[in-house]
Image (tube, rainbow over all chains, first blue to last red; front, side, top):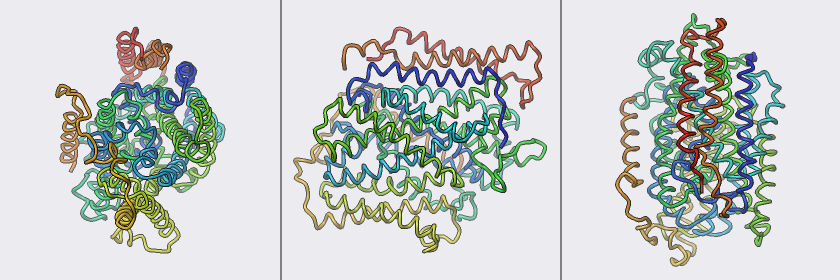
Length: 553
Length: 74
């Protein structure tokens, strides 16, 4: 891989960014006085701050390099991750689930499991989440190091340690508060730093229509080629997309993953908490204008021999994740290169800081305080949160070395999500909406769902069973297998939870008030004008989502 | 929260500061390249994207700064 030279101005921009995020960490430290400040940013954020942070926490390697690279590989189908794979779940979280989360004043998602079910279900989920989070954090770290290595020619190990140390410093100093502050800054840097790539790509090729006309038809449609897996780039049917991605993976991630939900918990009131995912949904729908169009621009240019554009290769293997960095190198002159590199770094740091701030919260409240030191004081929890941050970063570094050997980032991420989030969504859905689900039903259902997903992953990987048994098709990709594995894990958890609940004892209904639909007061908010109602903006978001799917059908 | 938190600057102020400082650098770099006649090897360099994109960042940054200069996050 060739390093791209940076000028003094580019270096200065990168240094300004690092100075800003570290400076914010130090600035906010004096306002971080107790555990609630550190883990929940004092519960005082507006819906806009929480909403942009909600989205930015998800803007890691997955969103930028991985998605642009996957668009190059799979085509327009990757847009499903932004639309059906996100928007319905975000709206569902805002309208139906947030009232239970927020009104119970829990500090984490496993905390809800403790109230609704019991301690063992909480600890099981907390351990699984903690493991998943540091694994994902490691992926982000790997992607950060890749960018630094690709653009600056830095040593892989040094760049990874420098990036990790920066995140460690500002999260250790002021926890979620600094993570959210820097996530908002990162949100603007990503848009200003990467949107211009798409603009210049469209100008060079001619128009958006010209881009779509120069990619294979299977790469430019969302649904019309989904009946037969051989007709689309991702080798998946509409059933896999709807059940696996649109339902299980999407709802599992956006409604139960504490990494994103934690941002909504930091909102100052119920209305702001419910508006958090709705505001994020509008920007989520817009992100394909950077990553999907960027990936298609890279594809068009690489097929044009006169363009001189090519992805990086590592031996015989094409590095799909280099699509976005190579476009930046193509279009951005002095100054803008620094901005582009900073935007990528910002994206990775947002994802990593988000994972680490979620990890330190779950570790401290749901494992350490729950199992090890039940009577810990606020100042002791604050100290433990800081220790957990450093520990989480160190584990992430180990994970990053493992991630380096995986062919693409995205496939690996989905494999992890289907282990943990998919069955958890079944547990949460049943827990919030069915009052007779029992603590033992939830625990054994969750264990069965997680175990089956992990077993299926190993069974396919080591050839114990044919992949077609999972995907219900002779033709499929790794991505399709991930979608279907998530669906089976969800279904197994759902069925086992119900069956075990039929034969085990329920919690008294008086202990479930505020946690389960039907036992909870429905009028939780004061009357507000139409334009301030979450339901109104949820409808607007849904309408835009439907229009986009029809337009790109 | 303690009374000290009342003086905490709004996040939007920091956003403005960041956009203004980075946008300003990009804009000035673009102006320098234009005036010095330096040959640029990037595609579409003739459009001078650093000048107009840096300018847009400055404008947005100034708006954020001015509208949040005296706003504190409670």
